Length: 84
Length: 84
Image (cartoon, rainbow over all chains, first blue to last red; front, side, top):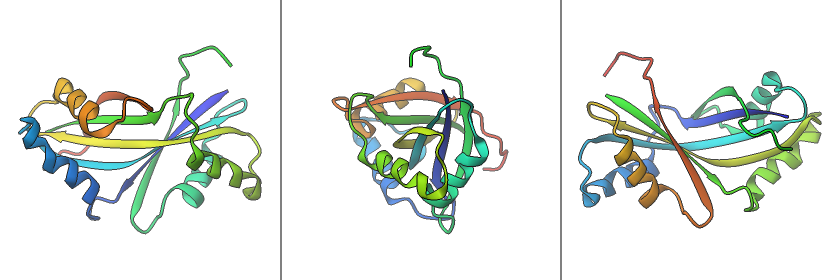
């Protein structure tokens, strides 16, 4: 088993109201050293056998990200657990 | 400027219908080697000055994750761009 992680984020020029809401709440927690918060999606795709980056890219492109407003990154993640 | 990345995922024992929906659509794309898909949140917190993992943990704990059903991981991300 192998895992590919896809992180989908809004493009930098797209406003992220959810992240802004979190950033706006930080002063009430006494946190003043945060410049920005942006919130996206983190997707873990587990493959039977070897990690298949090309397939993962196809899945991200067709099902996970909206290419008009979002960018995504892919990486193979080493699995720390030997179970399954 | 420094960035801390928080990844929030449903705990393994919690059902993830959104991920299951993506996994269920894969055979129509001709993809048969995926065992599971799970979808969580990817949050990028940018600090003025140095990365502050303790603050980031506090933000994740209080604002980003629901500890009853979600786990989160933190890491400092090196910023590849020198701008800003």
